[in-house]
Each structure stands twice: as structure tokens, then as C-alpha cells.
Amino acid sequence: MSSNAPLTEIETHGVERIPDADRTARPLDLFRVAFGGANTFATCVLGAFPILFGLSFWQGLAATLLGLLVGALILAPLSLFGPLNGTNNAVSSSAHLGVHGRVVGSFLSLLTAVAFFSISVWSSGDALVGGAHRLVGLPDTDLSYGVAYALFAVLVLIVCVYGFRFMLFVNKIAVAAASLLFVLGVIAFAGDFDPSYPGTLAAGDPLFWPSFIGAALIVLSNPVSFGAFLGDWSRYIPASTPRSRVMAAAFLSQVATVLPFLFGLTTASIIAARAAQYVDPAAPNYVGGLLAIAPTWYFVPVCLLALIGGMSTGTTSLYGTGLDFSSVFPRFSRVQATVFIGTLSIAFIFLGRFAANLTQSISTFATLIITCTAPWMVIMTLGYVTRRGWYDPDALQVFNRRQRGGRYWFSHGWNWRGMTAWLAAAALALLFVNLPGQFVGPLGGLAGGVDVSLPLGLAVAAVLYLALLALFPEPREVYGPEGPRLVRAVDTPVPPIVGATAEQPV
Image 1 (cartoon, rainbow, N blue to C red):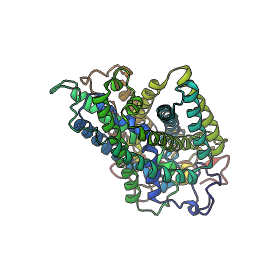
Image 2: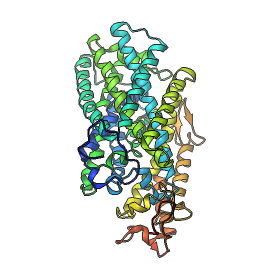
Image 3: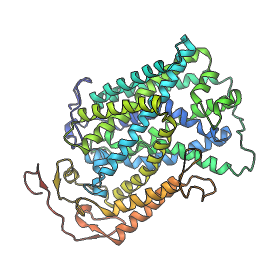
Image 4: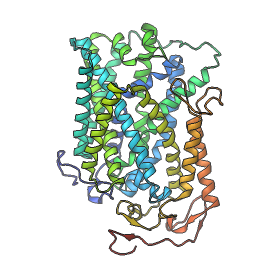
């Protein structure tokens, strides 16, 4: 796709290495897409959780900033693989999980995308219908919700089919428009905001730390959810771009989401003070509460926020979904895979909302997926460090070309070191999940009610992966000319690349 191509030219690139001539994106573009995907109404809902957990405004702000900064730090290194290898992060994970083991990243991103696409469409559709009901008397019926959901989903699918350039154009507009609407919210709610909101937890309450850490982890999950997708967008950045600028763009894109998080936190504290029934932990309704406290003139901005936010989050999720599906099943082009997965996702959204009432279940599902994704991100980051940022782009494409062999073939296409570390860390983290009323793992109560699943998964993945690399060294050829960092290597021969589309052994 040429840099001079019109926005309406459909992107044809799949997960093969993007040609250097087509890699014209800048770190600023990565910032716009990543920030645009999170600068949405769905993020505001996450921002309300500290208040739902009983924290005061200032305690909630501290938990939000902690979760946001830690999550952004975990996410930032995942932006480096795209410019380096010219492909998405799932394909790049072949270097650490093996030619076949890379399907782990593909399916994690696939499940995450479908879950967050659903959450985005549901929350934005509810806000749009609710705002229109209060503003012009639109009937609050299943038909109205169905039309709103269909509007979001079809518009998102169209943008994703056209591809990266069109998605980037949409997000450029979305970032500015959504930010302006959030600033208008400051005016709308300034008179009702009281920063001294005390929360519902009494001083010294034993539930304080579980609530504080739980709120921080929910915020942290938002930047972590982008881990598998960063390569989808950063692969269009030239390999010569300074790595510090790429990481800074990814980091700042999440730090900037303090705007929607703060909007959610602030308005939730107002709702708790003026319409407490909407923040009942047993049946929270943030959207309903927001509309109940908003001045009439802000109903139109709420509807616009819902529309823009649904488009922005939906495109960043669904674009990566189609790309990953085409990488696992190479017979599908990117466009075919996007249409196929998009259609299934739309069907799932309607089934989950009207037939099976899955709206709460999908939120839990998304949290569990992120719990499994975080250890994968740690393995990718540590793998990058031990390899000194050196990869063989041709060997990364062995799976997509239906070939065998190469530097990343390891044991029949599986690198059991990375796979073992990921499986053990993810399984242990799931055992310690503690989401009261939703999902509590068998060991979820051992930490006094504190959900330690995510930090535990991160720590176990880091320690176990480095230990396995030290005890069972990888072949020297996977490390490139400068050799390994922190670990050692062995002189094990690497099989040549052979197979269906190989012109000759490499």
C-alpha cells in the first residue's frame, strides 16, 4: 500500500513483512491509534470502578494513576516488535514460543478483540440510546438498542475492511473530538463535583487494600489489553525509527487516557453523592447514572461520545482480529478474515445482549483473558532483552508460508521454554483471580481478598522464563551476531527452512 494511496484504497497487506516503501507511519500515528482506541466511553466505565469499590475520590485517583503508569510501562516494550520485524506481535512471538507456539498470541489477541469489541458496542450503544431517549424521547426498547448496536458494528467493519490508513484517519478525528467532548464535561459537571467525596469505606476498613488494589488492577488491565495489538499498527513505522520514540509513543498513549479515566472517576463520585442507586455494587449502572446527573445540554455530547468512542475502540479491536485470523489461517486474505470475524462478532454481540444476557459475563471473560495475556507480554519483553533486539524476519514467516525449519523451529515448531513459562504463569494466575460475584479462583481467597492474579502471573512468568533459558540454553543462532544477554547459548545446529513456498533452503 503506497504512502500516496487514497484513504479508500483497500489495504492488501496481511502479516507478511511490510515493504520498506510502504512503512511511512510515525510514532505520532501510533500514539493516535492507541490513544484513540482507549479515549472512549468504555474507558470511562472502567474509571468509575474505584468509586464502585467504595474508595474516596483521592484514593480512587491514586489507584487510577498507579494502575495506569504500571500498565503503560508493561505495554511500552511491545511496540518495538512491529517496526523491527514489519509484522504483528503474534508472528514476532515465533522467536520465543516457536513457529507453532506463535498461535498462542494470535488466539489471545483474537479473544481479547472480540471481548473488547463487544464491550465497546454495548456500552456505547446504551449511552447513545439513553441520551437520545432523554433528549428527543427515542423509545427505550430492544429495537432501539439493536439499531444502535448494528450502526456501530457495521461502521466499524467498513473502516476495518479499508484498513490501516482509513483507520488512522478515523482515529485522528476521534482523538480530537472525544478529547473536546470530555473537556466540555468539565464544564457540565464542575458545579456538582466535590473532591472531598469520602467513599463508603470507613477508616481502617479491612476491605480498603483489596478494594484499592482491585481498582488499580482494573485500570492496569486497560493498557495491558493493547499488548497483542501494538504490532498491528507499529509495523508501518520504519525500522530506522529510534526505539525510544516508538516506546514513548506507546507509553504516552496510555498515560493520556487519564482524561477518560478521570472523567469516569469524577462523574462516578457525583453519581454516588446525588444518585447512589446507580452505583450499587450489586447492580451498577454508570451510563444511567451519568444521564441522570447530566444537564440537558450535555445529552448531545454524550451521544457523540458514544458514537465516536464506539467507532474508535471497535476499529482498533476488529482490525487486529482480522489480521490475526488471517495469520493463523493463511488461506484467508486480511479482508476476507476481517469480514468473517466481524460478522461472527456482530452475531455474538446480538446473541449476548438479547438472548443470553452475557454483558457481565463478557466483562469477566475479558479480565480472565488479560490475566493470561500479561505473562505472554513479559515473555516477549524478556525475550527481546535476551536477544538484544535481534530477529530474523524471514524465519518468523515460516508458519505463514506453511514451511518447516529455521532459527525458530526449536522442537517440532514449539519452544517449550517459553511455552512452559507462559502456561505455568497463566494457570497459576487464574487460580488466584478474585472477582467477587463474578469469578473467584480456587486460591483466590489466600491473599485476604486481594486479587493478586496479575502481579503473580507477571512475576512467575519473568522468573520461570529466565530460569529455563539459563538451565536449558537456546541455540546460538537465534541470538544473532552479538550473542545473548543475561543468559547463555549452545552450539546446536538449526534446520534449514524448507517447504511449500521455499525456493531454496535458507
